[in-house]
Amino acid sequence: MLRIAVFASGNGTNAENLITYFQKSDLARIVLVLSNNKDAKVLDRAKRLNVNTLDFTREEFYKTNDIVDTILKKVDFVILAGFLWRIPESLIEMFPNRIVNIHPALLPKYGGKGMYGMRVHEAVKDNCEKETGISIHYVNEQYDEGGIIFQKKITISPQDSPEQIAGRIHKLEYKYFPIVIGNLLRADFKLDRVNI
Ligand code: GAR
Image (cartoon, rainbow, N blue to C red; front, side, top):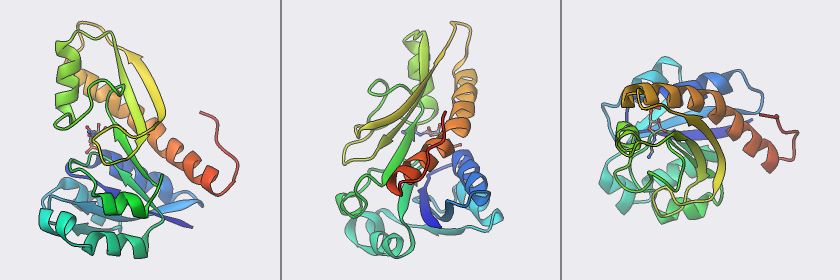
């Protein structure tokens, strides 16, 4: 059974969805949820689902090896699901092509520092975009610039509010993120892929 760690900064509905999806899988389990925010709802969600949690400070994350050492011992794969901080190089080197992020827009549009959650949907709306979507990508040292693994588009109309766009994007994330992660893990271990 492969072991996955999820980093998240806030609400954690994607983290919860990943936890429950993989609890029914014979491929992997989410074994650890980490957050830079000790009050983040994601930590309550994980605890409720009997998943270990860890919160950390900026100092611990960037100036010590504590987090790298902890997850190296405990996990095979890392997922970012609404995580706000840049990942340190040491962690990226320890998990080559094994750290994956989800972004709520069609990268390279609407990515980069500060482009997070509702801010993304508000920018999409302000620019009168006709389509948006989700991007699942490998993580490198730059925000939202690692190789894209999967994208899914939706069309939006001028009447859609940022909140409505966010709702539709979340649905796409819940549907595709676990399947894409499962396929990545299967590719690593040369198992059959699931068609999506
Ligand atoms: C998700 O929509 C995710 O794509 C986005 O934050 C939201 C977290 O929601 N991530 C980013 O914007 C990364 N730049 P959740 O906490 O309910 O899963």
